[in-house]
Length: 224
Image (cartoon, rainbow, N blue to C red):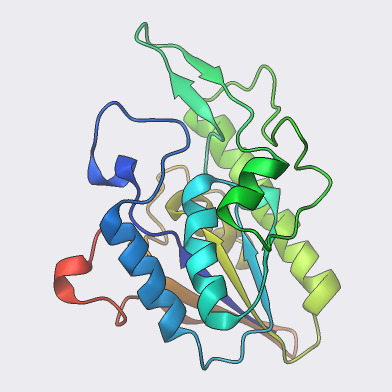
């Protein structure tokens, strides 16, 4: 099995717009990046598409879906560090539930939703500390869970699977894939917007075939 791990296109938070919001959409350039990465994967023989439940990844996955003619399957554990936390002016943050089932279908009409996406949303970590260590550990555990899911459903096959994720959680997933400890520095496997990293599970071996491929982007459209 091979996994194409894709970071989402540029979001308004990536662009630096203020105020930062809990679940930002793609910018105009982010939409173009998503289309370009979808086109670049069109002939790769991908048979399954996964994505995070967050708005920017759903929007990116819809563009990829259009190119691959595959419905996006939401896997909640692909969400970014910290989930849906909205900062308040007093230095605190409130946890929001995120998009619900109807909201996700407005973004991706053909999206395949798991049971843990509800009519009220998907992020329900009451009392979540939100500190770097807690976020890092949760993201690492989510990465292990997604790898276990892939092995259970696609292991020992020649399938090619794509997943649209985030800069932080994508890096956590790669660390978990190689048995490395959580990366609290957020810097071990960095990825540009719509950067593609290719991982393979073959004959009991785990390999990184490429990291952060951005050849589908013109130089002026390369963003973080």
